[in-house]
Image 1 (cartoon, rainbow, N blue to C red):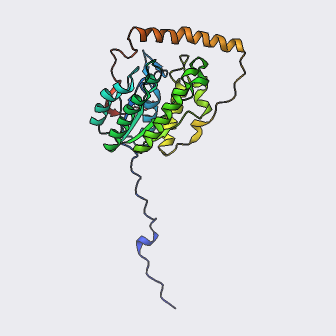
Image 2 (tube, one colour; image 1 turned 180 degrees about the vertical axis):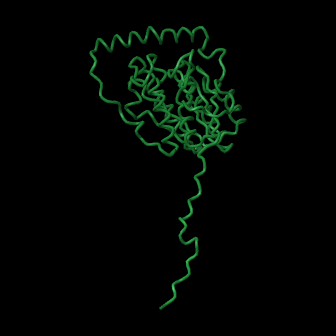
Image 3 (cartoon, rainbow, N blue to C red; image 1 turned 120 degrees about the horizontal axis):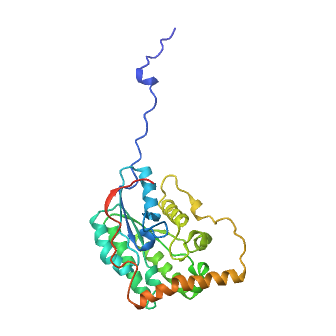
Length: 278
C-alpha cells in the first residue's frame, strides 16, 4: 500500500489573514467660511456641528486615531481665508484638507472673479504641494433656491468653472453640486438660504466621503428629495418678500457699515484634536 504523504500541522491551519488596510487619513483640516464652521446645524448656545464635523466623524469611524481641526470663520472672503487659515493649516501638516470658499466674494457688489480664483488656486497649490489630499466644492444654482438672486447666476456658473479648472491643475477632488436638483431644494437650507440646515450638512459630508471614495460611502447623497406639494404664486411671493426683508436687507446694511458676522470671531477648532463622535 503506498505511503501517505506526511502532513505538517500547519496544513490544517486557516490561511493567513490579509494585512489590515491602512487608515485612510490621520490629520484632517477644514478651511472656509460659515458653511464649514457649521452655521445652520446647531446654534450659538449648543455650538455648531456642520458638514466638516460630520465628515470628521465618518473618518473617525474608519480610523479612531484621526485628528481634526476646523479653521473656518463665518463671513470670511477668500483672500482672508488664504491669509489667515492657510498658514495655520500648513503648520498642522494635514494629509487631508477641505477648502470651501468664494461665496462671500461672489455676493459682494465689487466681486472680482479673477482675484477669487487666484486665492482659491493658491490654497489648492500650497496644500497639495505640502502632501495633502484636497477636496473642494462648487456652489449650487442659487437662482433656483432664491429667485431674487437670479442676477447672480452667471457669477455662480463662472466661479464654478474656475474652481473646476483650478482643481484639475492641482489634482484636487471636486464635489460638484451645481447640476444636482437636491442642492437647490429649500428643504436642505435654512430660512436665510445661505446656510445648509442639518439635513444639508449631512448631505455635504456624505458627498465629500463619496468623492474621496471612503469605505461605506455611496451616491445616495445626490438623490432628489421626495416631491413636495406645489405652491401657489402668492405663497412664493410672500416667501420672497419675507426673505428680502428678513435676510437680504440686514446683510446689505452690514455691508454698508463695513461690518461682518465674523468680526471678532476665531476658529472653533484651531488645533488638531481627536474626534468625539456624536
